[in-house]
Length: 308
Figure 1: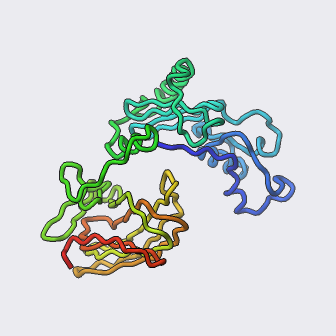
Figure 2: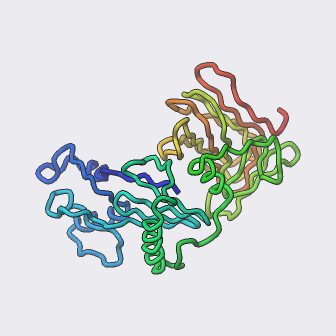
Figure 3: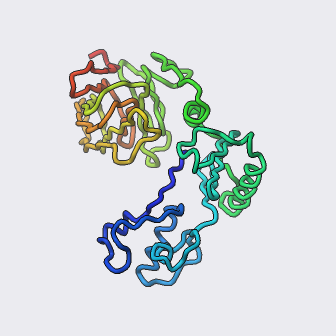
């Protein structure tokens, strides 16, 4: 889990205008805040009584200068096998059995693990994180083991290890021609790549392929068969980006059909695409071919599973 701390969280207020007389244009707030503050602030703006069950803080007094202290002395997160706490310049990140300590003022990109240099700070932050998570349901820092995809992520982005080489087709690693499945399983059956959801109706499955070098803007196409129909999305990550920005996705409605359909979308990527995700409809989906081509005329990457 990589956490980017925002210095400004006024975009949702900006949708109302500049709020003349309350917040001048260009207002900058330097203290870290968290998305949980949005609900508490919205309730205050609506004139409703504060809800004690909300973890967030009403930020308006801080934005207007009525309150001069920081809204939070620490911020906390927990997601599956990962958890983090930020206190001032320090951030402690726990992932599975791994632990990292970052100085965000000196190292905002979180490249240097200072755990060995500052063990007392790490121990104190670990105690705060454990105390906070003890009140959650279920209690504790971690709720399940860390998945292999996150182990690989930590290896590459936090520990600087080489990225794993994609196998042409490997049942041991779950990759087929460099593609992996998330929230589902994949297999080649009768010349077709079949993706089956792990938990139908819960999370949409998707397939992903990394280590690409396709200049954008680009066009992605997929030959697909989906008897349930739904939406297919293409999400991309550019060279230099650590995660998939939510705005970098293009989705298309796909009708239910027994026959194959060719679905294509223009990807307005401003840079070199290194990682592509194909978000699939609910239910089992069959894929015959995926291709990604640059509008600049660079060679097309194509993965064919049906031989056509």
